[in-house]
Length: 247
Image (tube, rainbow, N blue to C red):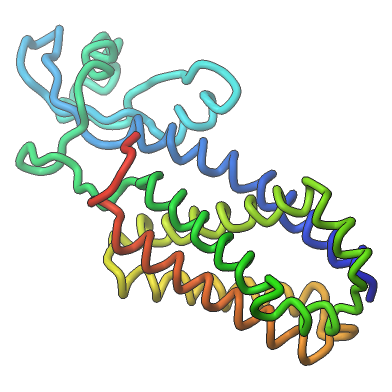
């Protein structure tokens, strides 16, 4: 298969990831913002009660517009389930709490700075891996690319932006797995990144099949992507909560 085919295949895969991942990240932000129990003063009984927003409803209605807020739980329910929910403004001004008024654990959020550092590191690793000092000659021979063709591709912005986007999406995928499992640390990050790498390799094989891919090209790309994945896992898992831009 020609290099043009692989270029458009990469463009398609990254495009699909952007289409589905970015809305999913936005929806998760909305859901997390309105989830959790909040202590408010009930305007009817003038006592403190615990209420919870319907976070799923807020996410669905707030995806393209202002969220429609309503309560899903209250410690006065079901006895006063038909109240007019006048405590919603107070609940909006109150931070969620866990049992015993303990602040939500830090592991339940994505730390963006480690993700950005990991994406940059994996991209730079790819630039070094495919440079003339390491595996460029073998890579060009495996893909059937001539030097004039390579010079032309290097001048294009699109391949560079696609590779940056792919590294960034992978790093956010690892961060999401760590948040979902409520774990962090170097070893947890490595495990999450290798799990995601294996999943992507299996999906790629199922979608494209091994036909037309030389064994040399397969070894080179599997070697780079595995090494880059481990690097991302180490950085995201090791630095999350220590080096962070919090949201």
